[in-house]
Image 1 (cartoon, rainbow, N blue to C red):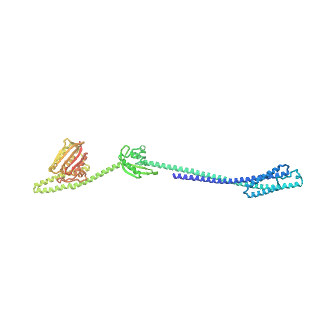
Image 2: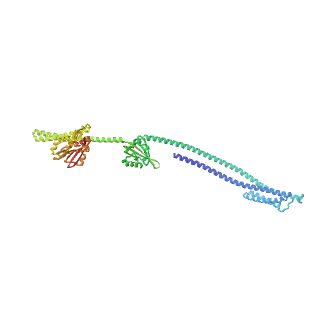
Image 3: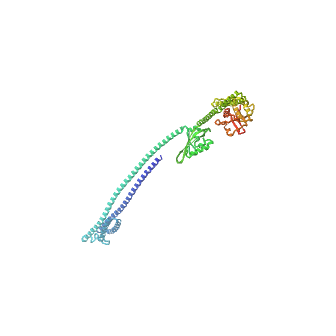
Length: 594
């Protein structure tokens, strides 16, 4: 559109320049005609003066001739005065005519002849003090004297006639010259008039053509402008429909991060209408307080012309947080200005799915670890006790054959101990396998905690007696819980069995139970060998191998504590350990009170 406007202005200036040029040419022609006409008028004025003087001289000569004849023929003496005045007037007029015709040699020559004839006349036929023969005088009477006077008059009048003839010729030439110039002037005026009229017509035609062209150009420009505006309107309508139909939240921002336009997707995403957000900074509306710094950083990145793509958290009008994906793109405008288009999509479901996937991946990893641990226990920890059982059974059988009762009793005790250990291991494996397959279900019931502890202490009392370990229990009889008594027995028995295993001979194990903040806390504390902080932190991780032999070389699988953690957590409780190497350990777990 701008280019069309420039072309129209250029053509308009060209048209005006052409008209002005024609007017200037016309004025030049008119000026030349004026100069020519002025010169002609000046020449005509000169000719008219010559013509006037020649006519006056003709009249003066006629006066001279009449007065001269009157002197001789009339009786009136006035003719003598008239003749004198006419002579003086002739001399003056002749001098004037000689002066104004000084540039015309032909006229000068004729005037010289006229002057010579006049001089001859004055010398031969006119004397100022002469007494002319008048009618009635003796001279004027009939006779010889009269005839001489008549002849003189005729001769003098003839000279005057010749002079008059000269002035008549000058008069006639000037008349012819004036008539010729007038004809030429009229012809030039007609040419000038036609030229002027033609120039005016040409200018009018050019002006009309330019006007018609301008009207055509204006109509064409208006039409093209209307078409362009219609196309722009159509494109804008298309853009509006496209902008509003995008199934994502789209926002247009100015260079100062203020909202210009939002679509329906943005409204549905954040519950803001355009009237609520237009002209406001987007970081003040949907960026949570703890992410203001991040929002400002993204704004700066876009201001530097960078495209941003980030996954973060934004809040709705009601303050609800959601996971969103943001795509920001700067849009360059004229004169260094720019705007920003931002696209927001709700990725909350995807994030949840990713979290579930990560959790499933972690569970699968744990299951694989558990599986590897399970096969390791079966391959190693479970096989070794059976090897011992087989070996000691063969020795026992040999002692029985040899009737060695002391030796048989010793190996029978070893077989019994190994059988108990293997049984406990099989029990733990079965319980753990039930947990992993999801088949294990808690069977909660109300029971007194001290009773369960007493039964399990009785079961392990023989193992403690073999190492001369004293077991002390501090458990109020009124402490009851709503839990699975079998599971709690397994947890307690595992903790107590580990305490016996890692407590040297003559050691002490203390069992306590108490209520604390709505929970029942159970602790098993020994003064055994203890362990370092690093090992303590890994005790309950299935993928960490923390198995180690007891003070008497008792074997262990490391599976019991992992099993205890899962059982306790199934009850909504927690389990932990505190230990110091060389001073003993304390294992505790808590479950909700009944």
